[in-house]
Image (cartoon, rainbow, N blue to C red; front, side, top):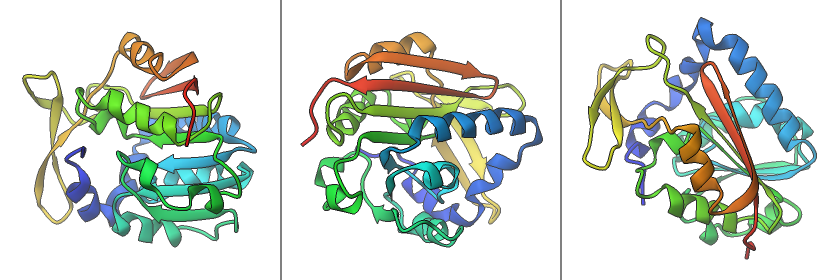
Length: 226
């Protein structure tokens, strides 16, 4: 499985974080950073689709350890030079849809991870593949572990407009990078009910919260990680 955005984000690596500069989103971003910090404090975190490390930087100092992964080496190169990282943080190239094959996760986080985190990935996944992705994410951590997900809400005028909907219900946006190249990007905006239904397939104690421009959700896994 792929999101179809891999090449887009590889090309966008050096301008990746400009989306976080939008003035209208600053208050919500501050609240979301606090939520992420609190949720992942003292945890051994496996972060999926870490990108340039923007969110890794938000919680890494308070986490017990972090292995931050992304399919694109280009964005991880940016992440590694973002700041001086604690020795408990490690970056690895890995496929978000094949985390079972990520070598050395246990060793690299000094024990089995007890939390999985994915920021702004759900919205790029094909609707028919989300359940498979969530099941794979849950297998990375033991039963009873925390899975934390965050992503965008659609806000007219702040988000790129939806330009197309396919037969499966996936929605798409047209975007242009600073080099002038045009890209069509899948960007889905789930309902709160949809999220509960999907997350209850991998765990219990599901919590979701909608805040202006962003949502976050947590679930405790009921499966067992290998």
